Amino acid sequence: MRLTWGDNASGWVANEALFDALFAPVTAAISRAAAVRPGQRLLDVGCGSGTLLAAGAGAGASVVGVDISPGMAEAARRRVPVATVVVGDAQVLDLGGEAPGPPFDLVVSRFGVMFFEDPTAAFANIRRVVAPHGRLVFACWRGREENPMFSLGSSVLAGRLVPPPADPAPGEPGPTALADADRLAGVLGAAGWSGIVINALDFECDYGADGTDGVEERLATILSTSTGRSARQQLQPALGPQGWSALLDEVRAELRRHLVRGAVRFPAATWLVTATNPAG
Image 1 (tube, rainbow, N blue to C red):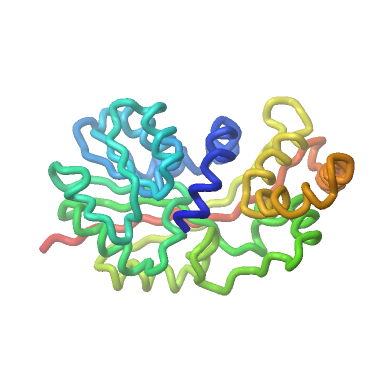
Image 2 (tube, rainbow, N blue to C red):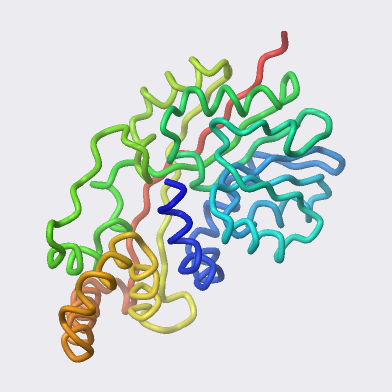
């Protein structure tokens, strides 16, 4: 996972503004649920390029981020200079040692907690640095079958790879690892969290918000994914410039066949999760 996100960081950071626009409803929902107050101490797990860190700092919190990708961490530091940003795996990292200070009042994450090899161990490790009655608020993806995010357009590239990428097994570390709500509740409970609430959060991924048809924007995000990077590495040299260009035109054509109200728009299905660190 460290290698994957090390490679993915450049594409994510290059498209930071686009991802922030796409996921704005998720950011807003997390912010409402977290209800950050001035003076609180906040930890963002899988902080990426710093969206939630910026929101927390703007609300007056003292903010700390952790991300497994050095590239992501560096982007977060540039975006939120007042934040402490640590590079490491939150499953095993000594969070208190790396970011000394009082226990955290809040832990937040936007699509950053689905990649742990042992999620129970990870959520237990995170809970150790949270104050009694401190809260956990995060969003994670539901199943792939509910989310065109993982297939629309990228399936064209995946179908040309040899071997084609396999669908992850249920619970395997990756974007949909926590899609099963019952399993997710069990993981958090086993990690010592209480008051667990898991609610559906559905929104529309709108690539055409700036008035374009969103095709080029969607293509850019596809090429920043693992499938896109694999396609560049395997197919671009084999096809040559003209063949690669033709393949990208196939992706564009696939996207245009699925336009909604004249742009690339599709439903997104996630969980919004809250939990509390019990006292004692």
